[in-house]
Image (cartoon, rainbow, N blue to C red; front, side, top):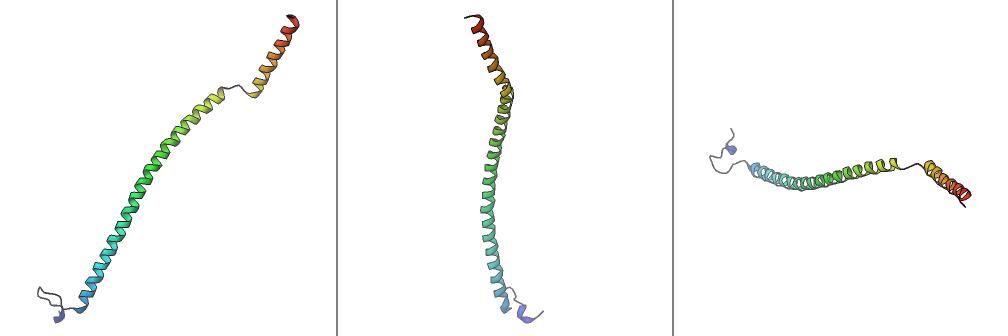
Length: 101
């Protein structure tokens, strides 16, 4: 082992060790900053998920309402049936007018 690396419990004798340690500390600070940004993004994603859940619930309600509306519309008479009914009423009115002046 070279003599310049033997520290004996004191500061290391390797002159590049201080620079390497500073680089590691800077790297750790950068990692912490990046993790902090990730934390903010994860919080935004959580809020976005809550919004999506609410939207999904609303869409289910709209889907239910639409199905109910479709059921009601399917019960309505068709245009041909309505025209036939109107013609029948007019014919009945004409016959009544003819027979009961």
